[in-house]
Length: 120
Image (cartoon, rainbow, N blue to C red; front, side):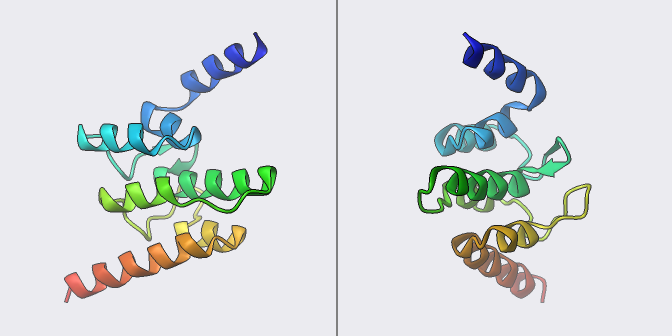
């Protein structure tokens, strides 16, 4: 019963895209992005990308399981800006470094390099 109420409160707080990130549902996130959701959307003072890295990092700390990178990868594949800071000034790289999230760091570095190369 409590879980259902908590889920209802969280779904009222997060946008649909942020809710899929919170649940680490990469498939649903990809469907939303393919349907036109903004990959750089901000909600709760986080971009989707900083939120994804935070959820992946925190989930690993809480569960003791290895870091995942699927929601981060989906967001980058759909064009999330790899250097866009959230309203508090935290970049995706800041968040990845905070959690020691090496997979996210590598993905971010690759996408940042591509953006630099494309802008030449």
